[in-house]
Amino acid sequence: MNFGEIKNEVLLRVSASATSSPTVQQNVGKWVNMAIEDICRRDRWWFLQKHLAVNTTANTREVVVSTTDRIRYILSASEGGRKLIISQLKHAEAIYQGSGRPRAVTPHPLDDSKIFVHPTPDAVYTVHIEYVKTGFPALSLDTDSNFLTDKYPEVVISGATFHALLTLQEVQLAERYEREFHKYLQQLSEINREFWRLGSMLAPGATRAAIPQTPAPGM
Image (cartoon, rainbow, N blue to C red):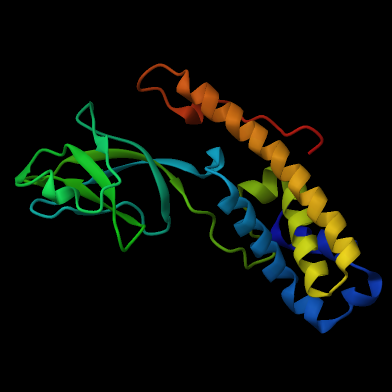
């Protein structure tokens, strides 16, 4: 489903008297995006996993990974076939002093579109990084869509309907859609756990992206 279709489905679930309200018409898109943000924050989802090759710059530790993504979690990194250490230390430069071939990567402390490479590269190196991004760009045009609206629209619809009814202070109905939202999230989490379990069983160097997607039961 695209953004426009999702919004229409949310409006169908809100009471007829509220649907004509200017507040509902103006905010239905915001509620849809809030639901998508809620889902993305819940887990380290397989559908937010990405793999990129980025080049270092000589004499600087900072590397821009993506101009659009925000990195939540670094899964792995390698350079020249060597696995690099993933460190969460804020001051890893104290351990990996000097310059040379990359040995470790750390999250950037101030900008989650970047990483730090340690020690400071002395030349251009290609680093392959696998990470989980924070979410999707906000939907704005009715024709917009993303993985969740395409593959699991009911999760988004139930979450957006919950936000709508809560805003409209229709508490009992909101609680019903909150329960439905959590039920769908639980189903999605089960798929997610299976994905990462299978991913851990892959041969070294294989990509988790090769694992086929599995629809959630009843979704």
